[in-house]
Amino acid sequence: MVELHWYIWLSLGVFIIGLTGFLTRRNLIVVFMSIELMLNAVNINLVAMSHYMQDMRGQMLTLFVIAVAAAEAAIGLAILIALFRTKAAGHVDEATELKG
Image (tube, rainbow, N blue to C red; front, side, top):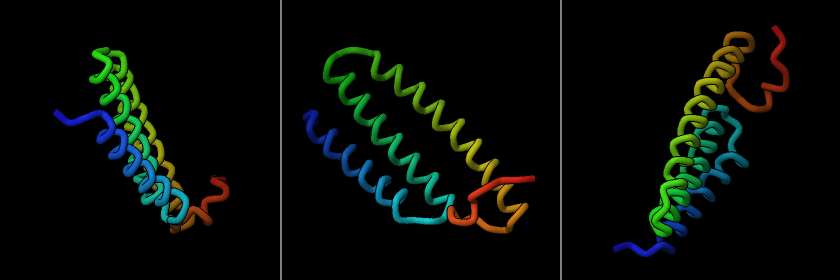
C-alpha cells in the first residue's frame, strides 16, 4: 500500500507546477490549465486524506471541487472566446477590460 506522504508529495509537485505556470505564463489558456492543475492537486490531497482517515467527506468535497472546476473552465473559455472576438488576442496583458 502506498503511504500517505507519497500522495502529499505528489500533490505538492502538481500544485507547484500549476502555480509556476500561473505566475509565469501570459497565455490565457495556459493560465486556465494551471488553475486546473492546482485544483487537481487539492483533489489529490482531499482523496488521500479521506482514504487515510476512513471518512467519505473528503471524497464528497472532491466531487464539488470538480464541479466548480468544470464551471470555471466553461466560464473562462467563454470569456476567452469573447476576448478573442473583440480584440483577436489571447494574452493576459491584453485582457484588462472587457467592454462591449
